[in-house]
Length: 216
Image (tube, rainbow, N blue to C red; front, side, top):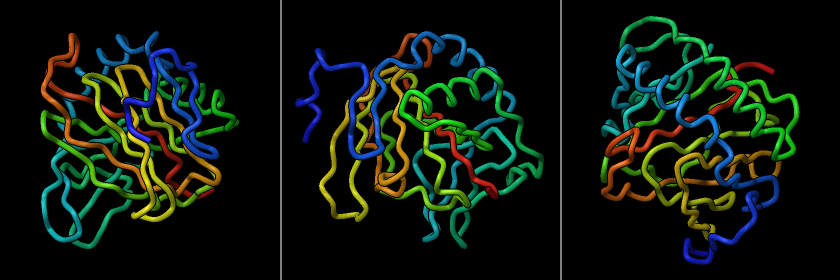
């Protein structure tokens, strides 16, 4: 299935796979406030370029909120209680962000979601994210909640193997994707961000990904 098969006349909640839902415009009512907080946050906590285990720099820049933050090195990916670039603890997840993530999870049928990390990925024009699984978390019973802000992008959502067929989902500012249960370990990624300018975030896309990273 490709992006052009998703019509503007679709329902606001679209099932992508068993346990996976695209919540169109779900975060839009809060988007201005969230963006304002993010712009200020990124001034004080600049995102960094992480690396792949092969030693290559990732195109996106990353930082985190929460008890744990996502880090990477030549030894692999994972979570840490301190920012490896500054050796400081990560700032807490803002209450309004936490509330947004919980409401989105509830909307998709996942109750009692309690994320302890919020990964912030900043995409500039041309940046992308290859197909991958979110499998560094300790608790796979909790879903992933992904909030898209800024420029539109094509999100790829596949199956439990890298070679499985992928859906190409046209995410817009304020869209949320939630996946868990049977789809929790599905491969997903982002095609290169196309040129454009968003009224609030300029020539970039910011993705917030909420997860339960620590112990159950």
